Image (cartoon, rainbow, N blue to C red; front, side, top):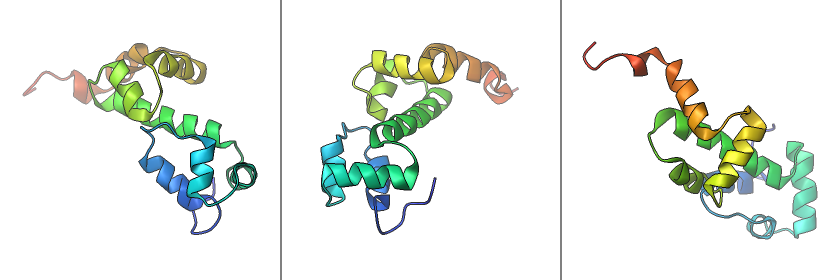
Length: 122
């Protein structure tokens, strides 16, 4: 994906990444970019190769995976932190992408991390 630049949708992509936990509509993204929704969606796809909605979902999942790997936050809280409306939505998207539920993803990741499995002081 091309880097965010000072023109086009780049600044709005940067802004959206800082606000993943908020509900971000196409209208809100387009308004931030000072474009009509139609122009924004077209330019976004030209610049990234995907739709704004798909791009947001991919980045929300990336952030959710990071939180599942690095924290003990409950799945409901992870979903909220990354902008999914419900834990069910996170479960559905993660299952479609990774083929597993969030709790299974967390257990699998932690089982493969020797530092996490070492006893304290050991």
